[in-house]
Length: 209
Image (tube, rainbow, N blue to C red; front, side, top):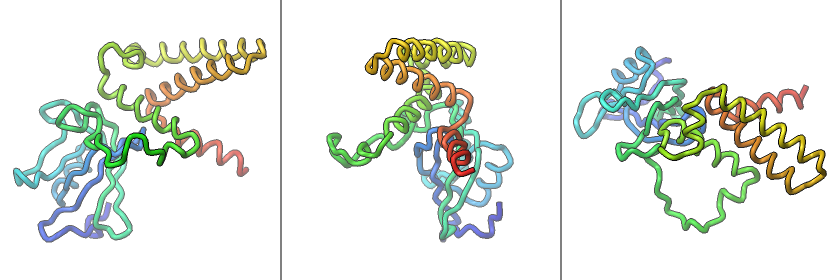
């Protein structure tokens, strides 16, 4: 990464937008200087500069909620960074998956929910959060903790249910069982660190060939 291309401000800082590489959710906004970027690249985990404490801080050094860096991009004006990470715990100091949990829009606003298949984005965000935070009494948390073999077994079970529903010629049953299959497939992708975007890219490439 060419640090000389980055446009640091008068204090030697550049804003860094931290994004979950799997779900694409924005986790937090922090700041970095030349030293913190070098250390981040060296260690493979996010290290920021605290404007209030005026010192470097390694995300998760004390809490264990580290962020493994997958990639770092800078924008077209070269004055902001996008740091894509795989989090091992909540990003917010309040224990939340993301620092961006409040909305200025009315919850009843249609907005982005009108986009086709927006539920897939919502589901992968939830699954990424559950894998990261592992809340108690959660079905998905339990499956993530039991591991890939258990999740894969559930996919096999749900695929069988889809076949039965199709043979029964019951559209409602087929819709419900297909939803269960898609949910567990998304869970498997999340567990293995494969994004839905990667799968869709394969489909697009095949369609174009």
